[in-house]
Length: 455
Image (cartoon, rainbow, N blue to C red):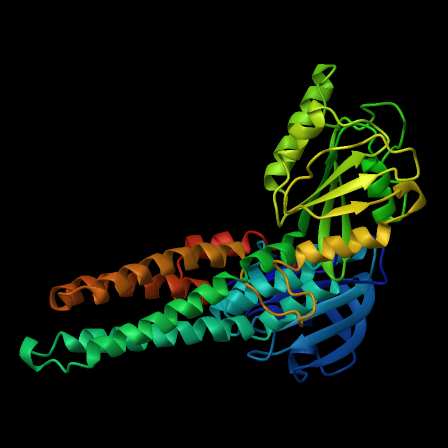
């Protein structure tokens, strides 16, 4: 196993920068580069630190601390040392180059965590939780990532795996019985246990939408005709002037995306080009992009101007509203009302506002929370939830379990038992890929390629 090194702190000015070295030569590199009072780094106890100078031959690179972690009690379970030098990038880069000269190589993206997985300290679900924690945008997403790191989701997946493995053992044991000696209760028992496993799989799959929102942020798209107040609403939600507000129609020609946190739920607010008959190619491209965002939106806020008469474009825009995912904001209540419709879109909550005066602002936030609560229980404590990778695995697992359910429900189970075994083995193999009980290099490359170099 090669010794690897990387800067594990973010670039830019800071009080401290850290260079991590992991592998069989980590302590030897520390002895070579770190000058401190006796004993030398390799002779010190694990989980201790030393103060001294970081040297490259006779040249002083910096002055700082060395943290020492001896195998197996480290992040990677290997010998690990961390040079803590002054922040700002220059010192850390010089120390890193000296580590390379002393025998280490540059760590690949996620390689420290990959080694932690391969050495059995964490499973794949916990490894992914580390990056979820680093990338968390809110308290709620951070707590959910911590639960996943602590193994709550892994425990649920392992329980399903173990229950399915027990079913496999029972099913394969039936093949050893002569047909006329097979106990009558065994197939119904296996079938009943299978349905319990299938229910557990479906329960975990149901957490995907919450996981998607916590990891990626809910995509909230603001739409409407020009000059209805979309940019003003964006600025009001953000608390600062992000979008240009003008009474000139078509001011917003491209989509503007900003982050916003509501009740611990990260959101990606998108102000879009006004929906109307485009007057030029640039505006047409902006409106086309608006339509694309609406197709992907987790939540759609559509604004209408109560001071303007409804027209054909108004009713065409109403066709984009989806019950359970849309809110209709009736804006400019401070002006004489000219907007009248005989029938509002069914199943779409409405909020009346005068956004520039923040009238109806609190009501709008409550409506947002109500729509979001259809997929996330905002009153419940955050909990570990599955990712898109996990969901795709569970889709395959569920398909195999549904097939098994059909085979065991048939009137001629004797012949079907032989057919059921391959489906059961496939379900176990795919399920094992969630936590890493079953893995291949392509799977690890896929997971760890999303990590930063320092992790």
